[in-house]
Amino acid sequence: MPVVIPISEQQFASAFEFAALGMAVLGPDSSVRGANRALCEMLGYTRQQLLELPPYALNHPEEWQEELGQRAQLLAGASSTYESERRLRRQDGSLMWGHVSCALVRDEGGAPLHFIAQVQDISERKLAEAALRESEERFRLSNRRLREQAELLDQARDAIVVHDLDRTIRYWNMGAQRMFGFSREQAEGRTFDTLMGPGATLAPDAAAQLLETGEWTGQLECVDAQGRMLTVERRCTVMRDNDGWPTGVLAISTDVTERRRAEKEIVLLNNLLEQRIRKRTAELEESNEDLRDFAYSLAHDLRAPLASIDGFSAQLERGLAEQLDDKSRHYLRRVRAGVKLMADLTDALLALADLSNTQLLHQGVDLSAVARSVVERLRELQPERNVTVIIEETVRAQGDVRLLTDVMENLLGNAWKFTSKMPQAEIVFGGQAWPNGSYLYHVKDNGAGFDPTYAYKLFGPFQRLHTSSEFEGTGIGLAMVRKIVSRHGGRVWAESMPGEGASFYFTLNENSPARIPRESAIEAPALSQAIV
Image 1 (cartoon, helix red, strand yellow):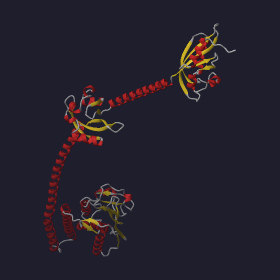
Image 2: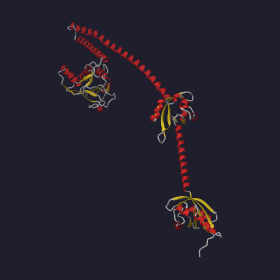
Image 3: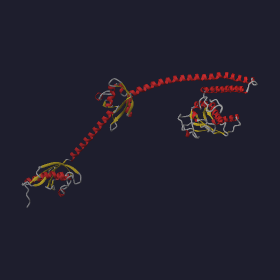
Image 4: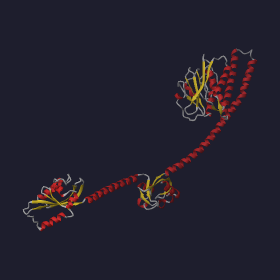
């Protein structure tokens, strides 16, 4: 016999089945006893599949215990219904958010029969809320970054300004306020020229260059809030949107007023210094000219009395030859020797003075050939000397052949003289490449040498490191060498130890004044060095 369902139950069953919300009948143990069509479609299960699921299968593991606790409250009579938002697991394993309303149905005796649960899909709302929260978080972080950036920009010493393409200022940092004296409220909404005068904005050609290239740097004249004129160096950069369209200009200004003032003062001081240098140079040249004239006149005027003294001494020696004893003749010879020395010194002084006025004739000079000619003359003067002379082939020098011949005569003559007491004299002339691009020449001998302690005196006029009784000479030859080499843009120095010979080095037309280490330029052991 078929079961007859009361009208009220039929109405409930119809409402349950065709409700727009998902509905389920759950036993007191939370097992599914019934589910409507909306819930099946919502979760992707068939009705039979739902009935076969264990009680916890639909709930998120993290929320299941909370769900049981709320239903226990209903069973205990602590409440009649509850609502919550839960994550429910679909048949395909994905999760959905549902708004769950649950009520406990009891029998006439008050015993629990089952739970009636309603589920509304709120996944889209949850997604919207999550998106809103994420957007709010991004907005909050963005605002924080903007505040931090604004604080950093305000700490900058430079004036940092952002203005629109129509030059309206829309950002004005504290650096701009400190530099120009205008507050942010005073500056924003205005333009540079209305705020600080026409010199504070870019000229039309500079503005055109800025839009064309995206950058511009230059100096502008601004009037600050106190009316003072400021010179600023402004660096402008065009800002663009994602599509590349210009949206504004970032202008960073640095106060260079003091620097400009200092630069003008430096230029003025340099001009004054140049004037003083020119004046002092002219005075020095005039003084040097006077000294040269004096030395020339002195040496020239001494020739006549010296010649007279020498001539009369010779006449006196011849006229009184039979009347003079040995001591008297010795005195006369000493007088004539002193006169000759004085004449030689006078001639040397004239020659040294003439070097300053001599015009250089620049031409190619084979110093090795000059050295061979000098040695030939020395051998003719002292054919009895046994001297080994080695002359290496060297790079042709550029200079005045007459003056460079004097250099070779003095250096080789010194080597010839100071090896006169050696049983087997040796002299070497040669050269090698100099690291700065020029050439290093040398004259070496195995003669008497000199004390390196006094090497600084070697190239001074009338300075001698040996007595005239040891080696004759005026002491002017090396001074002339130094003068000639200097006029040819070079340097000369010497190395020696007593009794171990001497080595003289010189350069011409050096490309660099920097001194090169000796070990890279001199093959002989480095003993002492005097640079002149």
